[in-house]
Length: 317
Ligand SMILES: N[C@@H](CCC(=O)N[C@@H](CS)C(=O)NCC(=O)O)C(=O)O
Image (cartoon, rainbow, N blue to C red; front, side, top):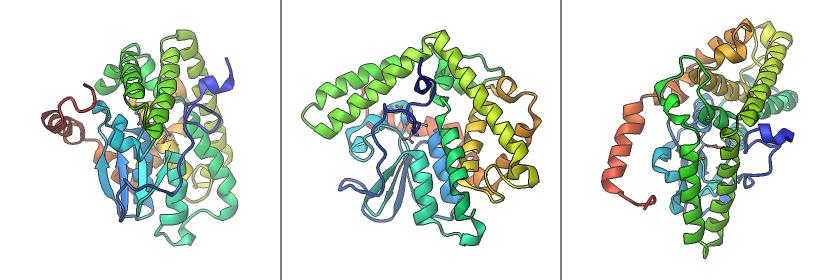
């Protein structure tokens, strides 16, 4: 097994995913203003919403309903060929990949006084920890199995032995064929199909899944070491005395691992990690970017009912 087998398919060390887009002109995207295509409960969307809140950026919301596979709708794939959320659009130009979007918001859209932000020479450390959070194989841990205790109902249902991924793979195979004459769509579906098939082989094989837990465990040990020896120990944050993008990425990742019931396994007796969580979850932008979107009936059930009533068999037909 290679190192990249135990990392997220979208982490910088992996070659499966299409390259992220940065401020890339797209005629079919909204041409004026700042727009976020996202899903309430998606981890990567959470990061971006928090970054927008943190940098006082006003934006327009476009929900992409993952349970309805709207991330595979041709209209959306023409904007984000990775077939995932989130995608950020600024005046008709698209930026994809959550870590890339976070950097874009920080450098191009921020309305913060530069003095409130970490200094330029902290950039490398911040990028390192941002990348680390991104490399955790959260998708496989979410869909893989139910070893976490007190896992929430939503996540218990998702870990169903790979059924959801088998369904996605079949849907993507159909889409590859259906759109063989439009290169952008054809290549996008093909690349996404590779990723889904690879994830499927991981979550259906306990030895590979065990290796993911080992990877997650060693990343959490690295995190604890940094918290104990870095700026957090002097009342700062993970990679700087000031709150940074690395803290946004880690807040969301630790929150998800907690929801998966994995806190006792991954950092049960590491109190510093728990203290870091408390500090992250108390941040005002965490409330705006994550908690304010956590209502399941409002953000998933009702939009899904509306979608099913008005778009029956649009994609999954
Ligand atoms: N970090 C990558 C991955 C994004 C990602 O995996 N998004 C998930 C939600 S957190 C998604 O859209 N999943 C739907 C799917 O894979 O079909 C990116 O931002 O492009």
